[in-house]
Structure formats: C-alpha cells, structure tokens
Length: 305
Length: 246
Image (tube, rainbow over all chains, first blue to last red; front, side):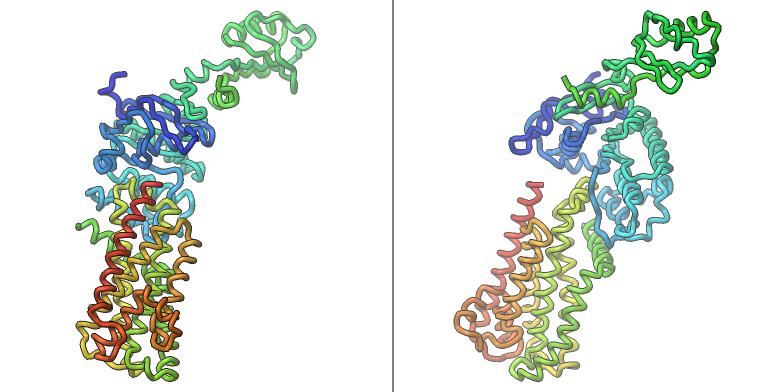
C-alpha cells in the first residue's frame, strides 16, 4: 500500500503511562473507504491507539497521520475531517439533543443534518434532555454528532455496546453504506461477529503490539485450530467400524455425532461420505465448522507467542 | 464569536433546566435573602441599611463558590470535555461559556436583591448606584474566578464541594455579611482580610452608601481587582494543566 492511498497511517506508535507501555511500536495503514477493525482484550491498547489518533493523547514515539493531519499539531483541521464516537463520554445532562446537535454543527460550520438525524432515528429524541436518554439512545446521538461534519475518517470505539439488536443491525447498515460512499472507518469492538461481517481488515492487539493483521479469513486461516467435521448417519454404521480418514483425525463421539478435525475439509468430507455410502448407510446431518475469528482471537490472546 | 454566543445561549437555557444550578444560583440565595434578611434587619439594625449589599455578596459568593465548580469538575470526570473537544468545541470555549453564564445568573440574582431589598426589607438604596454596580461587578468576578479556580483544581466532585465549603463558610461568617467585621475578635478580623467579601463589604459601605469603613475604599477596589486577576490567571493555569494531564 502506498502512503498516498492511506487515509490513516500509524507508524511505530508508542504510548506509555508511567512505567507501563500501553502501545508498543504498532504500525498499520488504512485505505480510503476501508473498514478496519482493531480487536483486543481489555487493556490491549485499542482505546489508547484511537485516542492518540484523535489527538486526545500525546504520543511517546511514532508518526500518525489521519486524513492528512497530524493529530496533535493540526487539531482544528483534524476535527473537521475526523468523526469520533468515544468509548465512554458524556454531554451536559440538561442540554436538549437538538441543542447539542446545533452546537456541534455551529462549531463545524455546517447545517444541522436533518437527514442524518432521521437516518439514525434520533428525531423523537430531539426535545429530550441528554439525561433522559437510554444508553442506546445516547450512543445514537454520539454517532450523529460524529457524522455531523461529514468526516473523511470515522473512529468508532465499541459503537454497538448497549445497543439492542435492531439498532445494532441499523448501525451495521450505516457503516457499510458510509464505507461504500468512501468514508474510512476504524472500529474497535469486542464483538467478533461484528468485526468479521463489517471489517475488510482486522488487527488484533495483544499487550500493546499487533499480534496479527489481515482479512478476517486470513486471520482465522493462520491459526492452529482445525476445521471440525461432525456427522450423524441413520444406521450409525461408522460407530461400529470407525474408518481411517487420511485427511482428518477422529476427535470424539457425542450425542450421536462422530467428530473429526482436519486441515483440508473438502477431501476429508468426500472420504467420509464415501465410507458412509460403502457401508450402505445414509447421512442424517453433516456439519463442517471452520475455526471462528473468536477462536483465533482467544488463541492469540491466551498464547500470543 | 458567533459560535460562542450560540453556545452561551444554549448553556443559559440548559442552566435553567438544571435544578442544582437553579437552587445554588437563585432559589437558596433568594430564600436566604427574604428569610435571613428579615431576621437580621430586625435583630441587627446596623446591617439594615446595607442589606442589599450584604445579601448580594452572600448570593454571589454562594452561587460562584458552591455552584460554579461542580459542573466544571463533572464535565471533566464524565468525559463531556473530551466529547466536546473531539466534536470541535475547544476547552477554552467551555471554560469561557461556563464563566460568562455564571456571571449572568449571579448578576440577575444580585439585581433582584438590589431592587427588592428596599421594598421588602426596608433597606436603604445606595447613594451612588454606579459605584454600587462597580463593587458588585468586582466581587462577582472575583467570586466566579475563585469558583472556576476550585473547579479547575479539585480532582473530584466531593473534593470540590469540600473546598467550596472551606471558602464559603468563612466568607459568610467573617466577611461582614452577617455582622460587621468590627465586632469580630481581632484574630478573626485579621483572618477576614484574606476574603474578597471583606473588601467588597467595606467598599459597598463607603463608596455606595457613604458610610464609614475601616479600610480605604480605593484600597478595597484595588484588592478586589487583584483578587479578580489573580483568581482568573490561576484558574486558567490550573485548567490548562488539568487538560494537559487528561
């Protein structure tokens, strides 16, 4: 990837809190229009990385460019190009949502985005005070604020925490649409399914370092975990005469299913089905379970080496 | 500048919806003015002529010292300042709006006291209203400056409340609001000299009402001005330091 193409560029970022190194020399680039996920357990350095990119924290090393801006030296320009939904933040309790949106738009020199308010279902909230909103409603308001300036880059730090299923799905749709329209989105989440479905690329942070970076498929494929094949037949013929499958290893028999683990699922499945056919048996249920991003994540977090 | 005034307008409206602010800026000072003012004017005739001044100092000190710090500390603790910053609203604007809105509320309550004191409690009207206004503005700015300084210094809301009480109670007891400073024991009379309320009370008496005072009025104005400048400089310095730490 060339520097010119990158909407976000982080090189050798280091951030220390006293003797603790929260972010330890990480580097990554995010292309324009890409949805990039930052995953990691609590304290891995995700929020600190984002806060350095947002100009909320000074760095102890490295170079950051977000939408062409240095986050520390070009803060006002950055705020016009960057939308941020912080992991935890608040707004004045007694301000109305309409007043907050108007205030932010005033400082961004933009008109109040009625369309955006409608899109996120925030219209009924406009006459409510911030204190009267539920957690999910507050998240929606913060998201509207983050998008008020029509930013080039959007940082979402755990955006769906506290959202119900309907709002979560709605937000996912909006993230996809925004990405298609060319907005670059960085997303920190603990929801692996969310990361897998939304993100083009993912970086997994472990103890302040990037343990792995790539597409969700690349990351899951790189793990040591194997694909599981689970089979149940009508006559249970394989129970009595367990066949040797060249490309798979028998793991266990449970609840009427025989389970194998393998690297190459397609050839193993063909081999198993041939055995079933040769025994004059029929397949009742066949399941092929590929290793999930969550399993790969746990593998990395539990044993980063 | 347009953004600042829009923010100020929104903040003033939000303040009116905030029960805590209404209590500390308006309700408690005005109830105190009516109830305690009635009692004091009847048991201490010496205080009756300058009741508008003493009640205004009480209202301004209470609002500024007790009411101003908490929203500032809360804004830092809750992440409001960060949310504003990343949405393009500078920290300086938050501090400035907070300061100006506090000044406006406290000025309004002081004017209410000024207007209704002679009517309700039969206190004197100042012989020099312009000088009354000058002293009022100085004590108002000094008190708000101290409030902002507490709000910028305290690490938590409970610490802010504690510091506020440490400033407010001596102001009420020693500053000449409840009874003349001249009847205090000498040690307390000396201690009262560190409080802006002492100079404000003396300046009100001599400049606005033409009464005798133990301190020279020009000196009182000079000290009050010094309090204003020092409090705001220290508050800005502390606020900047706290923001850097965040």
